[in-house]
Length: 164
Image (cartoon, rainbow, N blue to C red; front, side, top):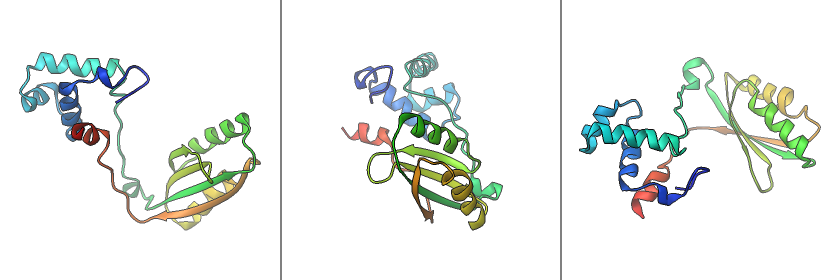
């Protein structure tokens, strides 16, 4: 489990157990986590603080269901660039993440240069993102939009580490 602050060797078996418990119940109080893991609350609190300080736990995220707010259409927009100057790529990246309705932006290698995950109210709003916020940039050569029918969260890296 490498990160910008350390390496896989900085995370031991107890840390992995704590991370698994936190993944299952991110809002659980330290006392409850400690009880679930069968360790003292002070040890659990120290380990959680250490995981945060080392950047293993990078933050907490509020997950909002876009459909509950009227954004029932999700799509992935593939973006291909005409040229790849650093300033052009950086400017487009910044503009994409600032676009209303954009959930995530991935700068990728391969035939496409960006994947933009959006959630919008309807097809017209999806079209507007493409025409008013993406293709208006000179650096963009082409886009391709794919509707998302369903999304599921993957098993994650903890499962892979537990299996090794």
